[in-house]
Image (cartoon, one colour):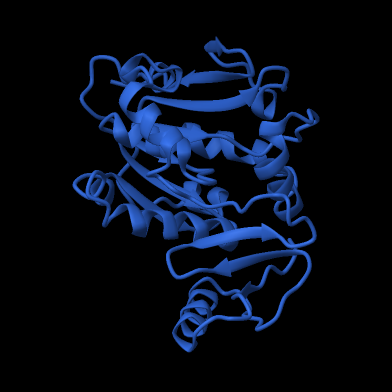
Length: 258
């Protein structure tokens, strides 16, 4: 994984520089006063962002749970009729405890939390975890989100295979997995975030190792999100396949679940 520094703009105040240095120290990253190429985390006054400095036309990657897109999805996205809600088995429940072992930018976790679930999130990349925690911190003081996000979304920075095998938190009803998969399409939607993410992380080479500990930990089911044409995780056929246009949800039911 490449070394991604934390930096600031050249006109940054001493306070902002200190904030960037604290961010770097918190996540075990390096601070660099001047970066003009490659991937970098840029500390702004209001937020943290990831940029590919070699490609200024490519926008910043930011975790913003108050964005128009997520707000529309939260208010008008279909609620418990959403595919992800059906996949985790939310029908008939006010809430489920979900462990999202591949949290990324937290969008799926946010959707589930907005539907009442309590979601523990695991993210192993310190860069992605820093972006996600920054988004959570800002959401915790937003007038529309502060009443529920802090109670329903918690981030744990670490390696998912290790944490799944030795989980110390609440035993989840559902373990949710959405490992990185190589994107071959060049659509506009894929270009920005996925191109940057693949430079940062590459494909999830050990994704197959997540399934077995997930099946041992979950009380009710394990749900794996895959691109439509992707093979089953670890070659294991699920009991349920929910097919969508671009993705599918593979659902593994826990046989001794109550």
